[in-house]
Length: 329
Image (tube, rainbow, N blue to C red; front, side):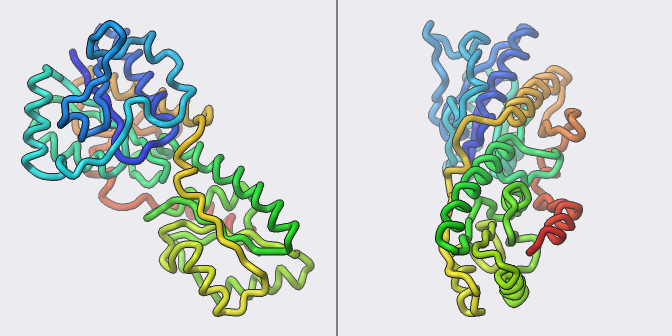
């Protein structure tokens, strides 16, 4: 069996570990794995990973150290051409031309939307792995890259806190999360932030300023607010303006972490999870499955239909929200 693997959409720490696991699991069962470069766009351009022997394949030896690396060795991209019916039909022809039997796409909701469209044009098997720092897909407790993104954000907040304390200021730290507050929520809890703003809850400025006034009157001279970029009231810059309009008692500064959160060496948790999912994807293909994502729930691999993974955004934990409220200043 010839299995293609690629990364698509935004890169996420742990993608390389997932590819490594798929290659090793498939090779052990006597199957060949071909790395497709630059996601769906690379598939359309027939761009494949070429090993030193000139062959289009990935060997266990070649991927031996990949788990320790961030980014995506197979590169990643988004493809406007693939969004068209003509592009999807052409991608199917490329897969037939190169005798692919199955695909393992690693990415988020856009990647899996693409997989659903491709399955209508191609008869091969498609089993995906959730590679996105946002942790917004249904069907898995955590996505590949989320743990590392949170660690990166927490480390940044810890450093920002030093400056906030030195200058008696409030810092508004914006983290990624267009539709999901998971990164912001976990970062706020782990870093001991005073306030968090996420898309899933109402951002009430009178209440926030009231909390800040109580905090300042108790003797605290600085504050940290973590904001998901997709908060309904805007990002850090917009929320900063709203706070000033409501007489925020602190001098404020804003920091946007941005793409910093997508890079870096993956945490052990992301490496473990990615390895489990990559191996699980190969096992699902060998078992004849298709049109599904491999996720993990309670440390067990589970399969979820692609359409179910992105039918809505994964809700944040009510239990964690309760803890946030208890920690609120």
